[in-house]
Image (cartoon, rainbow over all chains, first blue to last red; front, top):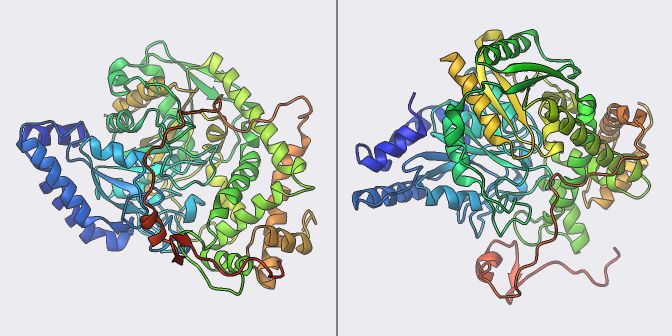
Length: 472
Length: 100
């Protein structure tokens, strides 16, 4: 397997060029993306210019950076200056942001080559990428199945070999679930670990950016580049993070791996089987498996689907036809808001705006939003207690392998259940990651989720690396 | 239907959200929102009287910086992305004097 480390080393040493690597990826995209539709937009010219700049730096004997020549696909809810950023929504179709997201700046400064903008469920609301206004992304492992979501395009891009790595955003599982379904590594860091400046907001107290990679070490490398405080994001944690690359080889000897004994049921037997294999592998590598309880875990779904839509209804108020994106003309401003938003938003986004507005409205606030915030506290506190007994927790990432298009029908709640195991972590603000761990039904990938406490990424990565080694 | 939410409330919420909806959409959303609220009712059984609400995960405090002008977005570039602009401003349909 070629890792981002190997690629960057080769580009820095001059044994290959960023231009050559980019050309290979553009050729693969031209060949297979018409079937997969991972990208909303391929940044051919910008990427070629960026690759040429990296090569020029290397040719001068200077260091282009730790991600020299590594191609990166960006979820299309991250702002790229002058390059369309749509959130897979008609309301932002054609919008070209006047600035770059901090993660984009950091990746470029490290020598990475941004190759394109990837498809997502509209405004990151969904678990299958079927909610994109521009058509779904297909799972590279089986084109009749979904890649997961909402960052389905970013997961598919890495799985299909369109880019070395990619970035997604995770509000309730939108990195980890598609990573599991596409057989790649996906990380949701601690809330505030990575700057969200330039990430189009969905639910601001839950959103976090993280990487998709084909291996655990690359995820550590990307996080080492994009992590850290940003004066432009007041919610980014004001401290330096220790290198994750440095801890990968430390092993799991003596670590306590928690098994949640009151986890909500619902995972398929093939998924459960892989989870058991993961527990066994960690035990064999020297970890101790300990039973823990997280009683409020089961209430995560309800709390999340009141809190996230409430925040979304507020964040999405900015799409009003005034400053950017779509405007449908009307006689007065108030009428213009109503018709613009009706024409620009898709069904799921409208549903969540309605649910969130309702949960926040006079007479219902205490019964819904206020109550959900209290449940959020219970979930956080239950996790904190569990982390006194265990260093990490292991759960399934997704209840099932990738499902066929249309499998969830018209029932929104059936789709929401896909995130049963990922959502509570976002509410708590803790980190979590999905590690590919073999295959289940139909030979499709299964992911195992590693969860850890606030800023315990180093421990989480030690466990993820050990799981990966156990498959080698 | 559990009658947790009525079509009249859905119509009112749509107005609050500045979202024009058709009669069909109101009917469909009423059924869907009602179904969701039914699922979310599992938290009604919890005793939350002594629980402090949690609005965000990290104990952040307000951050102030020196009151010094820093580079910001270019006005022309920002206005170029607007549906309508005039004289260095966003242009919108009439606000005052209309029946809102």
